[in-house]
Image (cartoon, rainbow, N blue to C red; front, top):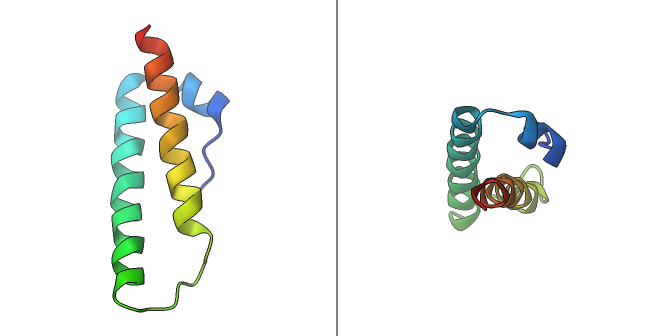
Length: 66
């Protein structure tokens, strides 16, 4: 998992952002599934980090809409 910073997101093309967003959402769903099955997470902060990265991308997309 690589950290996505806001300035990096702003420099991406729209298609790249959409692809990264889909990738992050898939990874989040996978991590939540592992957690729901009772498995101990290897990285406890990963779910929170994924949610923050998704929020960053969505924020930049909404900024560009207006």
